Image (cartoon, rainbow, N blue to C red; front, side):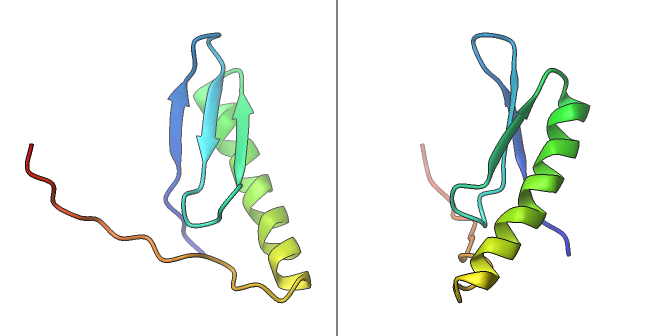
Length: 68
């Protein structure tokens, strides 16, 4: 499966990775590469828990145009 993830550096220099399609699926790492590897593990775990609880694996993600 393929998922879109976001990776951003916080004020302490830690990279925070999140999978928007899976609520609460967040991880971190000292580097972008570590954060990416960690979010892959987190995605697997989150999917397993959601399946175990009978929840849908993901939520709908859409892109919208916003005029600024």
